[in-house]
Length: 102
Image 1: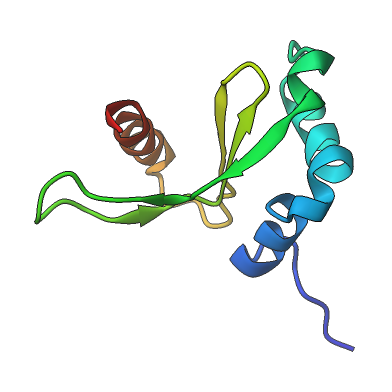
Image 2 (image 1 turned 90 degrees about the horizontal axis):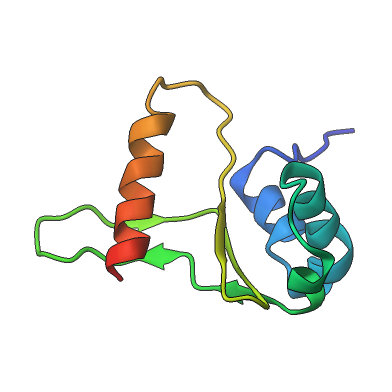
């Protein structure tokens, strides 16, 4: 029997980006990876659009894996990297700069 890997984009988004999983799977994941996250911030979790539109015509278009907004207004971008392409630092800076500028 073939299994779907949780590291595939489709399965990852179905697990962590599904509105039905916000307060059990996603909240528990966020608490596990962000230890100082306050429980009251997880009282309201909103899935945000993951499409980051380019600012200029020739700029790069990107799609984030999962973007959430917490009750406090904090935005959290959740990315999964399966293959180490040695560019995660640059990708993170690129995503962050687009989020800040938008």
